Structure formats: C-alpha cells, structure tokens
Image 1 (cartoon, rainbow, N blue to C red):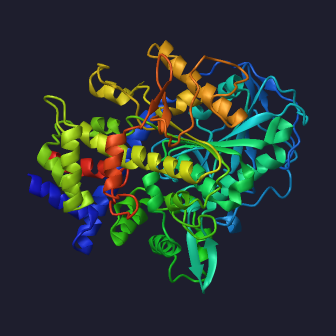
Image 2 (cartoon, rainbow, N blue to C red; image 1 turned 120 degrees about the horizontal axis):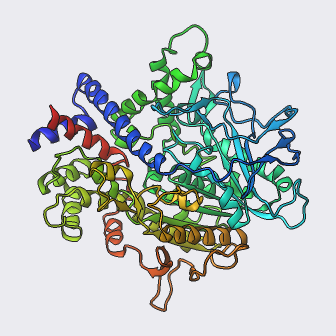
Image 3 (cartoon, rainbow, N blue to C red; image 1 turned 90 degrees about the vertical axis):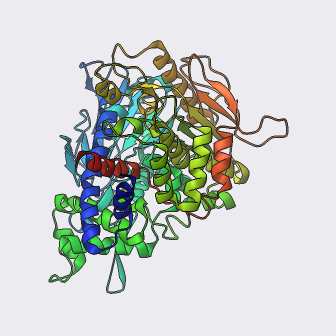
Length: 616
C-alpha cells in the first residue's frame, strides 16, 4: 500500500510523462480546490459578524480626492464603505499600474457595505465579484467631529487582507472594524486589491514590458497614498499610519517594509502569521514571464490576430480567473517546485518593488530599518490539518517517513522524521497527523517568523516585538466531524486570531469571558502600538490591565528574546519561543539555501491522493 502512495505522490510532484502530469494535475486541482475551499469556508463561517444595530443615519459629507463621501453613523462608530481609491482597472487599464481617480465622483454613497470583491480563484461562494473593486472602507470613532480638522488627529490602522494573493477581500464581515475603531480610538482602513491572474501578471511582447507585474502590491501602495492625501478629513493622522495584515496580508506588510517605494507611507507594521517561508520562492521576472506564457496559451491568445496583450484585455475576467488553477499545476511541474501549485501569481522580485529575497534584506539590513515591527504567530497554526484527513486514514510512522523523504529529500526527510518522532511523538493510540501538523506549523510560520524577527532586531533602528497567540478557538468542522462533540476541537490555528483583532466575535453560547479578554489584549497592544510605537505605552480607551511587552532582542542578562504570549486569564511575558525546534530547523539551513520545497497547502494534495487510494 505504501509503495502505491509514494508512486502517486511522486506523480503529483514531478511526473514521468506528459500524460501522467495531466492526470496528476487533474487530481491535484480537484482535491486542492475542494479541500482548501472547505477549510476556508469553515474559517469564514466562524468569522461572521452579528449586526449590533440596524439603526443608522448619514454622516456629514467628507470631501476627498475621489469626490464627496457620505457614510453611515452607527452606535459604535462612523463607517464609510466602498470608497474608490483608483480608476476601475478595466479595458486598457487591466494589468496596468493603478491610476488614482481622475475625475472625482459627484457624490459617493458609502453608507452600505455591498461586499464587492476583486475577481479571485473560483469558489462556490455566493459573492459579488468585479474588476471595479479598488475600494477601501474607513471606520472612525464617534469621538471625532466630522468633517474633521487638523486638530487632535488619531492614529490610523491600515489592514491588508490575506488569502494566498488570490482570494479574500477587505469587505468581509469579519473585518468590519467599527468596534475596533471605537475601542482603540483609531481610524481603521481596510482595502481591496487585485488578486491572482488579474493582480500579479507579467508580459513582454516585441521586446517591451507591456505588463510589468506586482499590480496588487501597487494597488496597496496607491491605497496608502490615498490615505496620505485624505485621511485627515476623517480625523486620521497621516504621519501615524500602522499597516497590519494576516497571512498573505502579512506577506504584503513584509514587502512594504522592505520596499523603498513604500517607505514614506507608514510608520509601524504588524505581521500576523506570515508564512514567511514563502519569501524564498517569489518568482523572478523570468519565471513570471513563463507563468504568463502558460496563461496566454490556456486562453488561446498565442498566435491570434493582433497583440497578445489585446487578446488578454478582450478576454472576459471570469475566463481569465478560471484558467488560474491549470496554470498553477503546470508551473509547479515545470519549476519542479510544489510551492507554485497553491501560489503561482505572486509578487515578483523585480529589483524595484522587491529588490531581493525579503529574508536576505532583513539579514543584511537593506530594509526600512526605522520602522517599528510586531511579528507573531498562532501557536498551533497547522494543527487543524488533522481534521481534514479523510475518515479512516492512518498516518503511521512509515508513511510519515515516506512523506518527509518525498518532500524534503532522503537525507533531510530522515533527519526531520527522527526529530519529530523524538520531540513530538503521537499520543497513545494516535497516529502522526498531529505530529505532521506540528512540522508544518514550525516550517511555515514559527521558525521563519522567529528568524525574520531576529534579523530585524539585529539590523534595524526601530524596535521589534514578537508575540505567540496560544488562545484556542472552537473549530466548527471538528465539532461536525465528531457529531457535535466539542472535545479536542479548540486550537490556536491559522487565521483564528482575526476576529479577536477586529472584535467581530459571534454572539454565541460558545463565546466565553476568556474570549473577551483576548479581544481586549489585542486591542490594548495593537492600539497602543499604533498610538505610541510601543505596544505597552498608552491606550485611549483602556479595556484591561495587561503586562508591559518587552522589546524582542538579545541581552546579556539571561533574558534574551522575550516575547508576549497572548493567553488567558492575562497575557504573559515569555522567552526563547520554541527554541529547540527552531534551532533545529536553522541547523539544517532550510531557509538560506531554499532546499525544502513543501508548500503550505501541499499537504491537502497529499491527503487527497491518499483519499483516492482508500476510496478507490
């Protein structure tokens, strides 16, 4: 049985013939899309917001460079939804650098969140998608008198959503920042930006760069510039902007921190659960052009009358997005790097927007060193993977070794397997699913985030702070699998902190006083950081008395690398986060040489192939 599994896994990674690659690609696409969608839908359902009040009325009119804006007044804050910060990237502007609004609108009704998203990876979700999506939302405390003057301006928190650079939106209910704005007394901004095939494409034709790439990253930067030009009218201080984001949003934050072009647009930065191992695999311009060539061929735009670029512009956006998954599979095969099977249309290391591999830039000090940083993780980022294995699957020690050798190579696969069998053995009567989840958490999140924070501490001029969120959240899918039994269904898994940061917890019997405490911890530290450059100095609306958060640095007093654990009944100062296992990963030099090529969602492919074996 194991030899059959390894054979199919080998097929899925590298193939031995064209027909095998096509077959593996079909399997991979079906399994990956279904399982990833399942996981994200589960997370999304957990983050739905319960409306607190249906009684709203309009705000005063705010003059902006996009035109006069009218928002809604709620019981907790003012809200302005869907303000355009750029011209719609349609027609000839598709894949062009974003252009600020040229002719201001006569009036922008920003009173209702229509939840418009940019086109992204196909899903079964009932959502509104549009290319005319470059909008932002603004949330303002009721303490501000609108339209605001330049007196007593508040700090600004600017959020970039995650989603593998190909899904997600700043309009999600889980990101409705009315309560966050009220409690932290900050002006909060959330944004949309172009994604996937429409957001990260490069094209060279007749020796000229017709599409230069990194459109989604440039959208984010233009939104930051819009904030510089307009946020004072909403009571925000343009000189006190903190950017923050989760997952791919945290990657985006990281990229702005290393980009000279973004330097003057923000003051502080927060990375929540950055899968920073990906920073070693951003495509080069050459690879990006090859990826675009595959999309052109999938769309039949090669050899057409007229230019390839014109063919791309004339193609409906739905068809372009639809071809993304097949391009991802073809790229993973061509590059012999499974990273690209989940994230293909990515920011490009072009020497301008992104000068070099981000981790290397932190290491040598070639980043915006004056910035103050918070970098952190959830302590069980990938442990929810155990619940997505098909029923009856047994990941025994032999198969665990097979998977590690297949993905990391025979030498390192054996070393990694031995380490995890010794340090993270299964509980009595259990298999290696949880052990595998630990390995993925450490490889993707914990250890590269720790490494980046230490590099930034060593080479930066500002202060660096590190956190580990250990608060466990009920995973609804686990409860479903166990027929309503909630035992063992609470984890500090990937993205589980978002609703605590934004204070959008459900009104549910499952929400406890501890959950509210964690909300307050995030609000206290994030709000203080936005206000004072330190997470422990001052919050305008105190919501708890939590311990001061020390700087993350090496010291000579035996208390090096202290960080904050977000937990209950109160946060705790700890030191040397996961020292043993992260020292192990550093010792095999997994990051510097980029030898290990296992992507975050690759385990879903593995699960899917194992499922096919067990079912068929």
